[in-house]
Image (cartoon, rainbow, N blue to C red; front, side, top):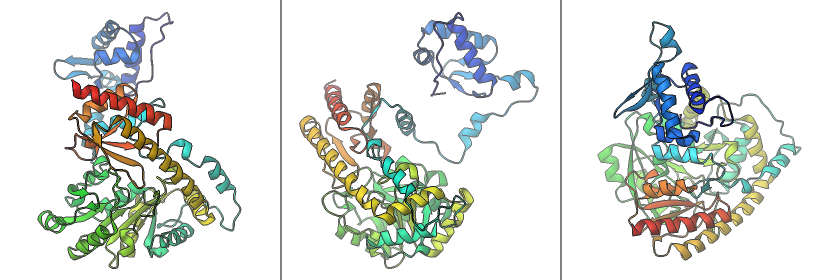
Length: 484
């Protein structure tokens, strides 16, 4: 209902209210708007259809007269009949109740708004966590697929753990990070999010508690909540997650595991120090609490390589390591991996086969060739140089326009700057005001329900011109809001 593209033809001989009434009636009669579907307010419909509100009133009156919709004070206007209920004696299925009772929780409202706004090509996207289309290797991808080598392309289903050739290649690639993992201990997945989903339904009991950094990317997706899990945040400092309370919280809440993004954390950009990584490994081993290490940003360092992943210092099989090509090579490839003990990997592989019968064989083939050919390292070098330029450019804008209204740290890699607002302005109101002006933000409450003073600023997606235009306008918006 929120994405109505149709508009009445003002040059038509058919009255506007009749065109609108006929359009809405067709939606109802075809079953696209089922019984219980809420019709947007008259003011919103008038704006979408670009007509006077009186025109909408007449159109809705016709639908009411036909017995298709009903208006009630306090609950708005809803569909009450359609073809089936008008022609048949049996009650049609109430799809709205099915939608509400589905076990997978819907995105929080603001995430749904962000996802919708990202489809608008004219939107300045200051929070989007992916590479700009200008930075993606479209031409080189064609070259990769045309390269001749001994590896033949198979378009059939792969084995449960994924392409053996790719797993061997990933095994060699992980050794450059200090991780020793045989192909048998690697599962190819369709990106980092699927890795989390497989873990949530394949390894954990309903009602389990997941510890994580606060704020956390986990709060922006409902993969664990939909599997009946509880999330519990642990504070961060400049060195990463604080370890002192992990043991106590594990015992008090019977925590099942800990999720962390130690390298260029999402959303804060924090880089966990080597000392803190060793401390975290030690604490979790002592408390017998497994770790999910999300390392999808690990390759995107600027000046100096980050410390080795937690997995590199895991001597007891305590860490499940997640890697992905979505943030570095292409989000469209949908290829990542989980590294862990073989019994765990075999369990997750079995679950994966039950859900999608394996990740795209073509994407696996492409990633294998990128890594084997050395072109990935070359492309990564270029990408990091461009991201560093964008980071530095963004920092200069912040220094010029945000010094009096916010504080921030300079990230050493990744995509994000965590902006702390000093003005007391509501980030939800700021989100709405910016959106009306064509600027898309990611406010802090996406990552922590109670956070109303942070914005996640991404320099990876918007162009330089868009970054400057969007941030300068945002600064003015914040200053004006704080004065009111």
